[in-house]
Length: 88
Image (cartoon, rainbow, N blue to C red; front, side):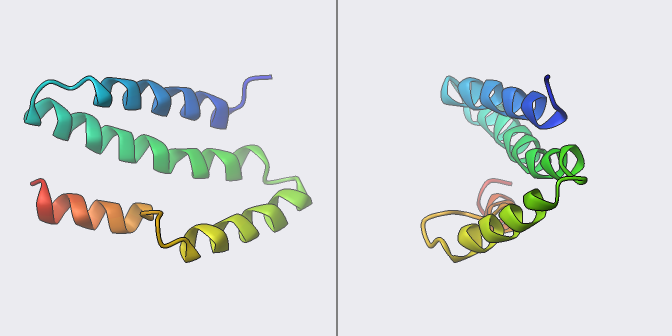
């Protein structure tokens, strides 16, 4: 079964592929913003797809903590701020 999260993940992978091939700054900026929005939508789709699964909530809470504590991982809010300050 194809879930909303699967579709969002496929969309995000496509945007990442396009981003890696962007030939100019304007196209890169547009694709980068789209990529960030699409990547962020994956988490919302996961929550929607699995809202009835009690084990998902436990798993997701743990993963959120891991992502928050990972110094090498930009969180989406931090990345949006970086984008606004350095790309716009």
